[in-house]
Length: 328
Image 1 (cartoon, rainbow, N blue to C red):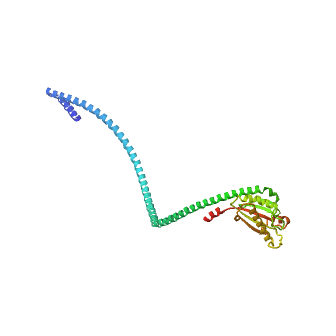
Image 2 (cartoon, rainbow, N blue to C red; image 1 turned 90 degrees about the vertical axis):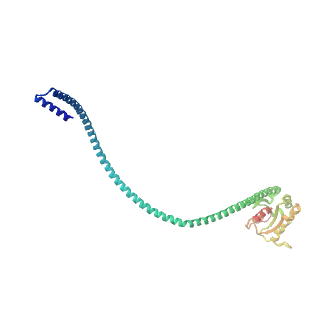
Image 3 (cartoon, one colour; image 1 turned 90 degrees about the horizontal axis):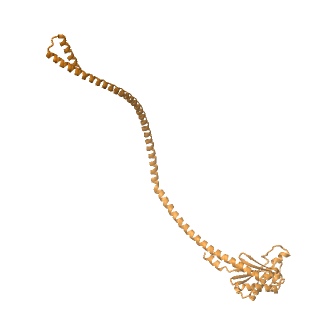
């Protein structure tokens, strides 16, 4: 359009210079001039628009240039990071491959171990079954032993109860005998308890004259008091033991030595008990110990006096306990 405008101006100038212009031609030129003026105005306006557009484009170019530079920098940074990532990936890949190889070797080793375990599992199972059977048998044996132990403990407790009862009876018997013979305790008589039995020990001077087996009056009174206790204690067995000293006895007739003398004295006491109390003879027995169970082994007059004695041993009836022991 600008080119056309310049051409129109050139024509007008040429016509004016020629000096011979018709009115019609003038009008045409006038019209063209106006048109050219309008086009010039339009061109100036477009030129302003183009200038503004140029400024905008220049600004956009500068912005894009900056963005391009930043993109170049970002691209360079990304390239570096990419190369580092590639190196890291290569290292990670190598590490992975190494781990995979290690895992493969380990897995093969574990598989071998697993195969060994699987091959032995039946053996272990058989051993376990055998041990379980043995354990069950031992448990059954243990339960049986526990039951036997409980039964034995019950029987032992029953025996202990019987023994405790007998001990109580022996103590009560000792108290009764001590009370019955209390008046003779200072005359060579001693009542004591030993090994679950009650002992009534009488010196020979309380019962007999020297070398005699005939019971004197004082001794008979003591035996009479004892018989009154024993006739009411029907579960008590009575053993009478005669003891002498170590001085040899020389007698005549049927009593010739200490053996005979000890037996005769024990027998005299048995008869005296039967005469002075309602006592079953089966509960009584006599024994002569001669000089061979002394209290004092010293060879002195005092020791010999201690050894010359008659012991009446009262034993509780333990048939119940013996039966229980036999049943066990």
